[in-house]
Image (cartoon, rainbow, N blue to C red; front, side):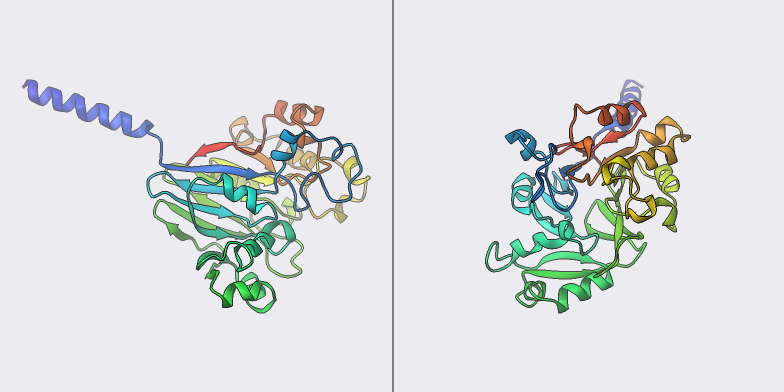
Length: 302
């Protein structure tokens, strides 16, 4: 009888502990800035002048790492111009790169994998069809393929892939300036939590998907925060701005419950965006409305 009681208590405790145990998979924020970085080339405005070494260190171009402490593998989302310093901040050996589209801040870091730098061997690079064709047929990217520095892996809209055990990634087409490739966001699914990553989109209203729908399904959402307000873009017509202003997004989500707004982390901020300054009034305003701002070094257990 005592043995049976002990076994029952042990199993109940083990079940409870298992439910609360952390996953071995984590997400690490490697960068939060728009393609041009910060300080921005040629910028003589206050936002780029007299930045401290710590501010410069933390203003890297938008990228995420997803890693597993058991298998000791890492995935990289975006290959940015800051890939050298971001590579040094990754936890384990790289087993794959996911690209969103062919704009400078999202894929140009691939060049560091070539013979002049890393001389990588068959690093998997996951791409949509137009992006794949662009890399295969245009120099210098085509040399990375021919020399087998990278191996291109096919992606299809809304079809999940498993780059390694415990992680599933699903691309979602989003409307954006598609001069050279299509643009996607990603659903990143770990053992316990799911992440939405949409660093670039023209407008939420132009997306055939629904941001609110996906916020209901995921646990964390990193979304486009390129520009904060109309003032930042000199009051140009909003239809001319190929990004939703942060103020627009907050207005769009204002009526949603706190639990949904709490999932949002604004990312991909232009060098002029006041949200890059943790002490700005804009930052205070966003936080008071129940949203978050992505910062380099943030860690999330998935």
